[in-house]
Image 1: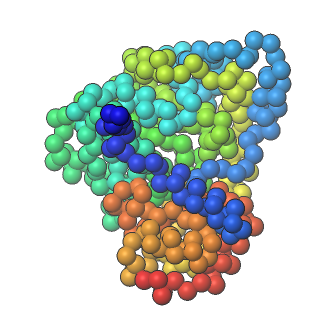
Image 2: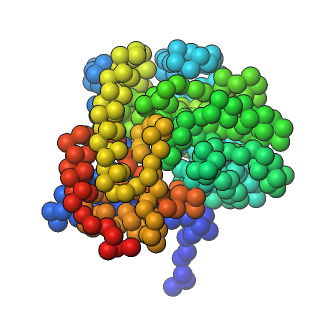
Length: 392
């Protein structure tokens, strides 16, 4: 029999680390290990009550179970536009500047397919969300990592970027508030990014799902004058409204970019579930009381997570904001994966090693706040009672 092989694009990527690790955690739990999982940023809190009620009401209506439109319901696009106007101070035309997504991950693929040809290059943050790299490789683009460092405040060095070979670069990913480091955008980072994109004809994409979590301010790259000519912003309800499993995201940009991305999207999916879109539109109407209650809970969790970092001897920056805590592991360890595996083995607590986010993430770990205070307190007790020095 002639050997069957996978496409080259499949051979160039690996299964997502957290997916592989969660299988191990599930097996350990099945064996009775009772692992406290602080690795994945999947909110465990409930979505807005009104959104859940809207979903239930809508699901029994006639004519909601057929195909929807790929561009999303008008009521959802308007809800996104109103949300951006109310909280980001950005005015968007819901009919031409907003495209709902089946989650931000889908958006990364659609944007990449709309703008990148094989052989084009992409600027990807290091450390950064691994999907930027894997999707770029899937579409045949060259990944050019750009450094984010603790010494540089985890912000892009645009002087250094100017020295890179930019002739084939068509796209640049930025992500502020930043994952995994929880760095907030500096006052001028979006302005510099837009100027850089305009100067070199590079599309700048800001992935912005974390701006409502423990953040001092909510910022959008689209607020920068001239941004609409070169910039795209992705957002979602996954973190801001505890709706990660609902797969409710969006893209905002100029009408021409939206048309190009919609061409790709319309050939890939058949739209979202109508009751879910109606429920999402309802969720977007929540006021400041919703976000205050959400962040009050995350502050309680953050206080315990900080103690876990201290118990592990991890150095962290108290200025960081977001759904995680990021910190440097103690000296003497071979790497972040060894450190995380030791914590899993000895304390039965799963944390994320920083190497999965890029080479500049090596030597760091990330703790998620997506566990209640009881489980976080259990993790604290366990980490206080282990000796990690012998594993160095």
